[in-house]
Length: 596
Image (cartoon, rainbow, N blue to C red):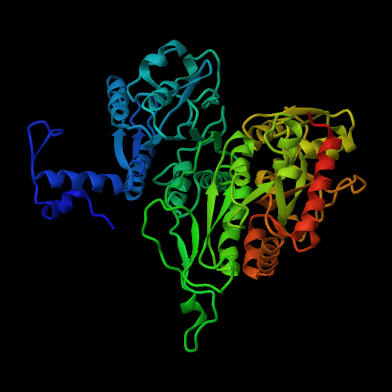
């Protein structure tokens, strides 16, 4: 492993001396030393820097807060442990706003991972979000921009600096101490729908709502964020979902954190170490199963999720690298399924199995990567029913689901939930919400909900399920059909009621729920399957199919999938032929729904 340049002086025999300008280095060395240095720089791995701005505002003249400075200090300590270079500011004053933003933005280099955390008061004025300075003098809405940090301006500065990952964590929706001078009467912060591309924002509570300052040393939101941020191997999208669920549970449904935007790639606050399977061959006499299969930690920082086999049975896959393409960002159901499958597939085949997220073009980028790969079984794709809808609805799509890839096997499925506000029935529904045209919730609405009321009107939402669920709870739409992961927390809090599920399920969380519309031809489920490039040999297909069957019989794998709300498929759809027939039936189902 290469050491930093500072520790390699003796090896090069150079004499380094810093001039008065710290950016200028005088080097006294022989010519061949320069060549060695160039070679070293070329082979040294480059990683995006991690930098953060952490602000805690508590000492307001109008409304003193107890916890924001504690929040900022705790977050600074956490982020520094996670290798962030942190700029921390306490009780930001008006005269320091511009200087603080400019100084922080000047530190950003293109491609850096940037996190901004803020705790304190936050207000909205005419749809804009502002974080007031502690010495703000605000008598009316017109005074807010002159006394506050403008969130949109901050995000623009990060984008202008060409930050790679841009993450905004806001424990900033506490009560508005200046509301008496405002005309609008709005509370909390507003949605930020025009944020620069590649920005992910997490609010302590929903737009227009107020967050608790907390009864302990930290705010409620920050408490849960601090608890989850160091969990290894958890993509940020999943981590924030866990934080949201914990905050909602702790507040008994009074505070619901909110996610806005998305990242272009994957981000982990703390990467999971790669796991190396010591052996999948028969264990030698005198060696315990646990010792023989003990995982080994890969010390490489920011390593991708990988499952390696040092030695394996003598098969065509033994010792080779296999890639599972996930055509979406990390953190969703397809990604979690792939990462649960990877170590099991590694043991079954004796191969190194790596999960590679290739998002873009609603899954088309990853699909095209699969199609261009060699059909040797070493590159596969994990995808969902969305793979069907995008091909159906987009006549200009560069691929056809049924002809351009091979169906290898159905991995898992889960029923969808049909929900409404308490006391409402499906037949009363005039509108149904979906996570967008062409999504699974749209298909379910056209099949299941329209069977309840043929005149029900579709209301598609942008930004996934969360804004649709929020409007359902608020009464702006009447009914919705979506996955249990998207809806169950709101069912448990009593804000939504379950009218039924689309398929009977042995999962404990769905046990006893009625199945709706049994007369509708074909069940609507959230499924995930495995696909291969076209042209794979029958022998390779059979080997992979047998490996999938072996994985599906592993009790640990079945339990892990159940924890994600997914049932492992063990019927004929698990085989290539059965999965192809299932794909055909799904294709016909989407076509009959006429979603265009």
